[in-house]
Image 1 (tube, rainbow, N blue to C red):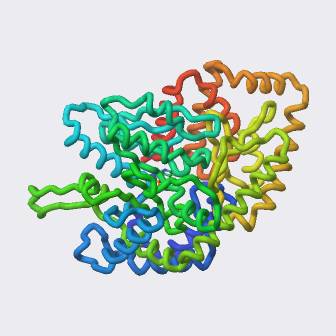
Image 2: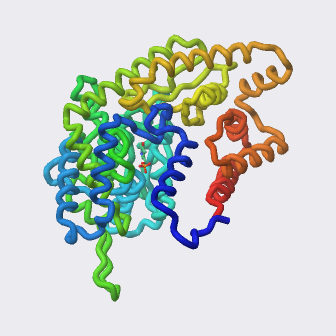
Image 3: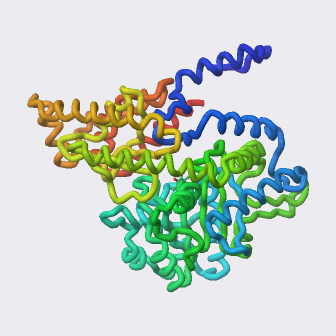
Length: 479
Ligand SMILES: *Cc1c(COP(=O)(O)O)cnc(C)c1O
């Protein structure tokens, strides 16, 4: 049990302990992580820290108490509106992250539908399989149903399948620009056209793309239209704390018109504490994240974002080209931005490649259906890309040797892999549960996870995976 110290400790002692603890984690400024952290440069980080610190105590809950915050918020919204080519009547709010932005867009759609289609008991949202789970999470909270539609071979939304799923219960269509798993931009014009045809709302999730696609375009990339230029797009989400390179806790949701935005607001007039009004989901809001976002936007400016986008793009192309020349590896789908998924052909097991890279100090997320490793390529990765490619080549060559060797265990592994790892014995499932629970309680990031993911993918029913992962969360948060 950990207790509150009976008497406070010295600031110096505490900071030392924090530094020691942090040293156990993966270094977030070393660009060895290919997800979670969007690292730009030490000078940007320094500015963001100072701006955050300046506003560490303020609270953005009340827009009247701190006019400087409201001004920053409005200026940030104005910048994002212009980046996403929103009409002048468009309006939005600053939120704590992509999940909140998506939650609010769905809440607005739901409450709008309550007026348009009051008879619906469970309104439906149609989203391609690649859409972020934040949609499923929001629907779970809001009493909506997500209807998932399949992807085409290139990894994009299958618009015909979306149309076939439209019913009188449908209220909103979703597209991603780009999708997180495969970095593919959904055919937004075709999705928005459907929305117009059936009189539905249409949300474009540019959480990860909102601060990179506009600058890739300015750098000359030929991208399909994905933003408010497309007629029929009614709302968008864009995260500042991703390719905006701002500290965590900053994202934007935008609506094509102010009227639609009103459906996301919440006001309660009966409280003894006064009339409570809030525009977004949070109550108390971090002012530090807003000030730091404002600072970073003005520090980088148009030229800084263009340069960051160029670095991330060139690095992405370098990795694609290298993967193209490594026998046994392939890029999944047809990515158009700076996110990639790398898959493998049998007998190579891509999760084992992930483990091999982890042993060399690179951390890539594992994905499923199909199995792949995920890379979110940022400006910071430009400095390390050649070392990464060298290690990737090394790991693949070791794995090819392993896959070729002829022990019976390896043969079994190989044939399991070819069978798409059919159903595994109960005993393996139990050992996976043990491994998961050990990982949950360990202080260090796990290195060997291929076995775990292989077994996860092999579990007979999706439901049993979800149950195991719930146990994992419960153990990881053990108080
Ligand atoms: C990251 C992401 C989200 C969720 O954003 P959070 O900031 O993690 O809440 C939603 N959609 C896409 C496409 C994303 O990449």
